[in-house]
Length: 302
Image (spheres, rainbow, N blue to C red):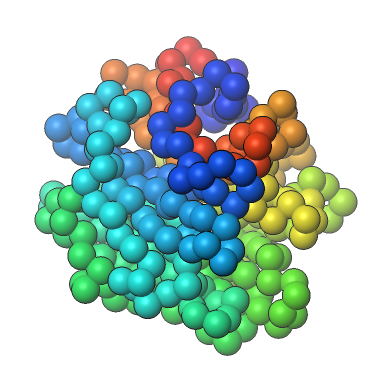
């Protein structure tokens, strides 16, 4: 089934588990995926592993490869200590035009609720080195930035980054998505909010863009939303559209949820397939409260 123009509605119950969580129960997560297809047809998947607070939080970003998009082999594990941070969240993997690769990494500043985004370049997805990291989205004392979605479309760099205001220490789960542009993917100009939660609806606490699809005319986005503070880390998926990447309008309904239709489904990442159709990758909750990473194939007619 397709939501709106082209975006497929995820179905976690029929999806295949790609990565199991590192433990059972709440706080153990495998997910926050970012997927890209290599020039030889290899699927490259970057994702986050997490344990509960006090047991490691987001302790690693992993890069893995697959020939079929379902069975993945780990090639690189990047640990939080290598970035001098308290926790890692969603990475963003980008294939560059010259055949090299870039990985954006979300890093939590120790002892604070602040986040920043670093970038690493490598000749191959298996050779990312934290020693080469440079901060490209620092945030500041008033806002933490994380979970970037980065696209190169028609030679232009586009960014949708999740922003958390830090003015109220007990309310830093609030979030909105800001849009940015760049000539090189490193030096970014931010242009303000592109998507925010809608008062009185299921996403009123915040909206975080998860992926963006552009057909040359319309911009469509999957996004994560939550109704209140209690749903932090248990977001559902919705769809937003716009004629400009700077301004996306959320549709009223949510389209994705986890176990029994009530759990979370978030951080959806898509990859278009050469023969038509696409694959969806996303993090979703299990009945025991852990989160796993799943994929599903969407045929061209769906």
